[in-house]
Length: 539
Ligand SMILES: NC(=O)c1ccc[n+]([C@@H]2O[C@H](COP(=O)([O-])OP(=O)(O)OC[C@H]3O[C@@H](n4cnc5c(N)ncnc54)[C@H](O)[C@@H]3O)[C@@H](O)[C@H]2O)c1
Ligand SMILES: O=C(O)C[C@H](O)C(=O)O
Ligand SMILES: [Mn+2]
Image (cartoon, rainbow, N blue to C red; front, side, top):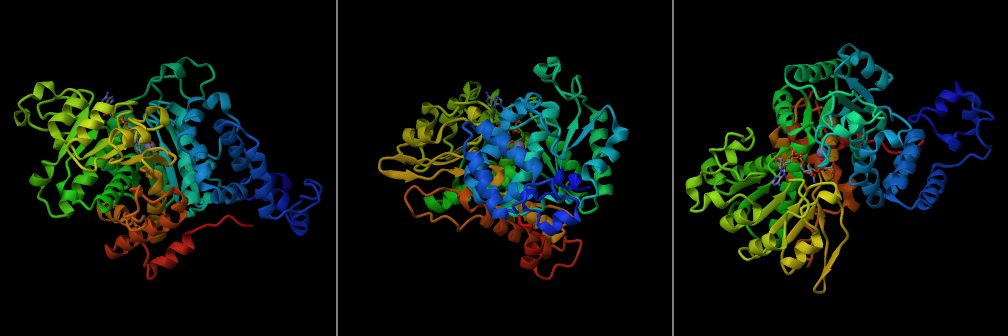
């Protein structure tokens, strides 16, 4: 029995089991005699961590600790958030997803569900939960992992990684979460040919069979875990919005790429407005890469224009989208439902036929905001940036494609090409940039800065739905943390304060749920409800 506890990462205390616990739990003789404190354990493990040289090695080491002892892992993570985030999460997580089979040591308490075995869904979820009270699932079908595409069952890592950030940022109890991967096949030829690949060796199943399988999973999860908050991550462009639209008014659910990214970009633009002292509704917005994230962000910013008093007709005039084919026009039969509302009429431009790339579009439109979610590295060229900067004092430029190798531009280049005028945020963390004697702090417009607080607010308030009011409240709550008058100020709060502002976001979201009477239980004190929900790593 003692061995079982040592092998259970939710219960294991390792060398910190007291003499009495060792006696009671049948652990005598299974551990060296000295009883360590949690702090001593963390110090020891962090020293081991520091001997690792590459980020991949560091991540693999941290995952071993995660597999053994969640308390030590999260205590250490919480002390080194800025250092660990890019290792545990994006961008290093992309390497572990691409090499999942080669690096595999442990399934990390995830649930692996296969479209070829729908009858097993219920038992699989039950087995993975192992009688734990699951309040939060991150599910992926891994068709659109970050910007690296289709990774089949390997994508389970993104669900595990997103959940780790929930805990370190917002104190979500790690024993109440479940990562889930839906293996519906893969169109990744490299995986299909790889004898080591752990997933189903067939093409992705599409159409009704796919939607039925997802629905079967959703219904079963809702039945097994009645207080569930269901987070969708990295589904493909054809399915992500459909699934969100199907479930958002029925269950407590969230799509991170559409909604989470929308929140963080809105918060970043509001931050940029504080710095430039300009008005949001006077901006011209260009979305580059109008897929899941791009269209989700555009919709969020557009809704903000409406909230700030513009009519739908007035607001639309401020928005443009560029995708593979160039500027999107309303006569294009390949537009997605999410792109359609923002497509323009050819008659607006004398040279519509020439607007087939970003540079030509920027020349014709004079955007003041350019947000990249295109997976096209280097797409924000010097010419594009100079052209944009020629027509606006403080160009707002967010190259958001992840991981690092796919970013549309580097922050340092954007500042150089705009002579320090660009207001920049990136998808992955970047170091400060020095330019002309000013140190620029670069905001990280990654949904990781908001989804944990959002989730904490939803879970603590027992909200039955996550609606647009709550989402807007989350975006607006991130203001006022950065001093906008400091030269080189960032448009977003720093990751070093992730823990603090996650609670700020949670309060805004929970208050909104309470005001709208969307909670399942009566919440009289939001702050208390949040404090009661939060888990801290301690024995
Ligand atoms: N920073 C963040 O928080 C965050 C959040 C979500 C997504 N992202 C990043 O955004 C990128 C896109 O993710 P997604 O989920 O929206 O993927 P997606 O596949 O749904 O969308 C990508 C879009 O880019 C378009 N595109 C491809 N090549 C292009 C080109 N040459 N020019 C213009 N557009 C082109 C595609 O047609 C598609 O519409 C990824 O790199 C992802 O990591 C970042
Ligand atoms: O995972 C991330 O780093 C952000 C985002 O969800 C993405 O898909 O790129
Ligand atoms: Mn994502």
